[in-house]
Image (cartoon, rainbow, N blue to C red):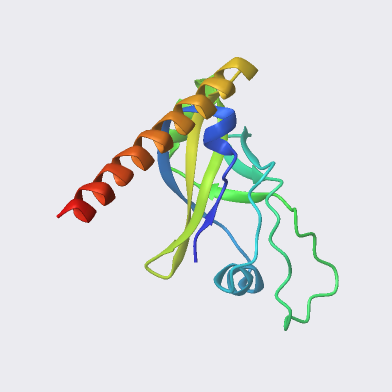
Length: 149
Protein backbone atom coordinates (compact mmCIF):
# COMPACT_ATOMS: atom_id res chain seq x y z
CA UNK A 1 0.00 0.00 0.00
CA UNK A 2 1.28 3.45 -0.86
CA UNK A 3 0.17 6.69 0.80
CA UNK A 4 0.69 9.96 -1.09
CA UNK A 5 0.92 13.53 0.10
CA UNK A 6 -1.12 15.01 -2.75
CA UNK A 7 -0.67 18.63 -1.69
CA UNK A 8 3.14 18.45 -1.39
CA UNK A 9 4.00 19.08 -5.02
CA UNK A 10 1.26 21.72 -5.27
CA UNK A 11 2.47 23.71 -2.24
CA UNK A 12 6.25 23.24 -2.67
CA UNK A 13 8.93 23.27 -5.35
CA UNK A 14 10.61 19.90 -4.75
CA UNK A 15 14.31 20.19 -5.60
CA UNK A 16 15.55 16.83 -4.32
CA UNK A 17 13.95 13.65 -3.02
CA UNK A 18 15.36 10.59 -1.30
CA UNK A 19 14.27 7.38 0.36
CA UNK A 20 14.46 6.89 4.12
CA UNK A 21 13.47 4.17 6.53
CA UNK A 22 10.97 4.79 9.32
CA UNK A 23 10.63 3.37 12.82
CA UNK A 24 7.10 2.04 13.41
CA UNK A 25 5.25 -0.04 15.99
CA UNK A 26 3.81 -3.38 14.89
CA UNK A 27 0.21 -2.21 14.94
CA UNK A 28 1.17 0.86 12.88
CA UNK A 29 2.60 -1.43 10.20
CA UNK A 30 -0.65 -3.41 10.11
CA UNK A 31 -2.64 -0.19 9.90
CA UNK A 32 -0.53 1.08 6.97
CA UNK A 33 -0.82 -2.26 5.18
CA UNK A 34 -4.58 -2.02 5.42
CA UNK A 35 -4.42 1.40 3.73
CA UNK A 36 -5.00 3.73 6.68
CA UNK A 37 -2.96 6.87 7.24
CA UNK A 38 -2.70 10.50 6.23
CA UNK A 39 0.36 12.53 5.19
CA UNK A 40 -1.33 15.92 4.76
CA UNK A 41 0.10 18.63 7.06
CA UNK A 42 3.10 16.43 7.87
CA UNK A 43 6.74 17.52 7.87
CA UNK A 44 10.17 16.39 9.04
CA UNK A 45 12.67 18.13 11.32
CA UNK A 46 16.28 17.59 12.29
CA UNK A 47 16.61 17.46 16.10
CA UNK A 48 19.75 16.53 18.05
CA UNK A 49 21.39 14.90 15.04
CA UNK A 50 18.32 12.80 14.17
CA UNK A 51 15.42 13.33 11.77
CA UNK A 52 11.84 13.00 13.00
CA UNK A 53 8.63 12.83 11.02
CA UNK A 54 5.89 14.88 12.64
CA UNK A 55 2.14 15.18 12.26
CA UNK A 56 1.69 11.95 10.27
CA UNK A 57 -1.65 10.39 11.16
CA UNK A 58 -1.48 6.59 11.45
CA UNK A 59 -4.53 5.30 13.33
CA UNK A 60 -4.29 2.35 15.69
CA UNK A 61 -4.96 -1.01 14.07
CA UNK A 62 -8.57 -1.93 14.78
CA UNK A 63 -7.71 -5.34 16.27
CA UNK A 64 -4.79 -4.08 18.38
CA UNK A 65 -5.08 -4.05 22.16
CA UNK A 66 -3.46 -0.62 22.56
CA UNK A 67 -5.04 1.57 25.22
CA UNK A 68 -3.01 4.76 25.10
CA UNK A 69 -1.75 5.56 21.63
CA UNK A 70 -1.07 8.90 19.94
CA UNK A 71 -1.76 8.54 16.20
CA UNK A 72 0.24 11.73 15.45
CA UNK A 73 3.33 10.87 17.48
CA UNK A 74 6.82 11.70 16.23
CA UNK A 75 8.42 8.91 14.23
CA UNK A 76 12.15 8.59 13.73
CA UNK A 77 13.51 8.46 10.18
CA UNK A 78 16.55 6.33 9.42
CA UNK A 79 19.25 8.20 7.49
CA UNK A 80 23.03 8.13 7.19
CA UNK A 81 25.01 10.71 9.16
CA UNK A 82 26.19 12.56 6.06
CA UNK A 83 22.60 12.83 4.80
CA UNK A 84 21.50 14.24 8.17
CA UNK A 85 24.33 16.80 8.10
CA UNK A 86 23.27 17.86 4.59
CA UNK A 87 19.66 18.25 5.72
CA UNK A 88 20.63 20.14 8.88
CA UNK A 89 22.54 22.70 6.80
CA UNK A 90 19.69 23.19 4.34
CA UNK A 91 17.20 26.03 4.64
CA UNK A 92 14.51 24.20 2.66
CA UNK A 93 11.52 22.35 4.11
CA UNK A 94 11.53 18.58 4.56
CA UNK A 95 8.25 17.24 3.20
CA UNK A 96 7.18 13.59 3.15
CA UNK A 97 5.94 12.83 -0.37
CA UNK A 98 4.84 9.22 0.16
CA UNK A 99 5.04 6.18 2.43
CA UNK A 100 5.34 2.80 0.76
CA UNK A 101 6.39 -0.77 1.44
CA UNK A 102 9.59 -2.12 -0.09
CA UNK A 103 11.01 -5.56 0.74
CA UNK A 104 8.64 -5.91 3.73
CA UNK A 105 9.85 -2.60 5.20
CA UNK A 106 8.15 0.76 5.07
CA UNK A 107 10.01 3.61 3.43
CA UNK A 108 9.32 7.34 3.30
CA UNK A 109 10.04 9.39 0.20
CA UNK A 110 11.25 12.67 1.66
CA UNK A 111 11.45 15.79 -0.49
CA UNK A 112 13.56 18.87 -0.01
CA UNK A 113 11.52 21.83 -1.16
CA UNK A 114 10.78 25.52 -0.91
CA UNK A 115 7.33 27.04 -0.53
CA UNK A 116 5.36 28.24 -3.52
CA UNK A 117 3.69 31.61 -3.54
CA UNK A 118 0.05 32.01 -4.55
CA UNK A 119 0.92 33.13 -8.09
CA UNK A 120 3.14 30.06 -8.54
CA UNK A 121 0.21 27.84 -7.59
CA UNK A 122 -1.97 29.61 -10.16
CA UNK A 123 0.70 28.99 -12.81
CA UNK A 124 0.73 25.30 -11.89
CA UNK A 125 -3.06 25.08 -12.22
CA UNK A 126 -2.99 26.93 -15.56
CA UNK A 127 -0.24 24.69 -16.99
CA UNK A 128 -2.09 21.56 -15.86
CA UNK A 129 -5.36 22.78 -17.43
CA UNK A 130 -3.62 23.67 -20.72
CA UNK A 131 -1.96 20.25 -20.86
CA UNK A 132 -5.31 18.54 -20.23
CA UNK A 133 -6.98 20.64 -22.97
CA UNK A 134 -4.25 19.75 -25.50
CA UNK A 135 -4.58 16.05 -24.67
CA UNK A 136 -8.36 16.25 -25.09
CA UNK A 137 -7.98 18.01 -28.45
CA UNK A 138 -5.50 15.39 -29.66
CA UNK A 139 -7.81 12.61 -28.51
CA UNK A 140 -10.70 14.31 -30.32
CA UNK A 141 -8.66 14.55 -33.53
CA UNK A 142 -7.82 10.81 -33.34
CA UNK A 143 -11.49 9.95 -32.87
CA UNK A 144 -12.48 12.09 -35.87
CA UNK A 145 -9.80 10.48 -38.07
CA UNK A 146 -10.92 6.96 -37.16
CA UNK A 147 -14.55 7.84 -37.87
CA UNK A 148 -13.72 9.12 -41.38
CA UNK A 149 -12.14 5.83 -42.42
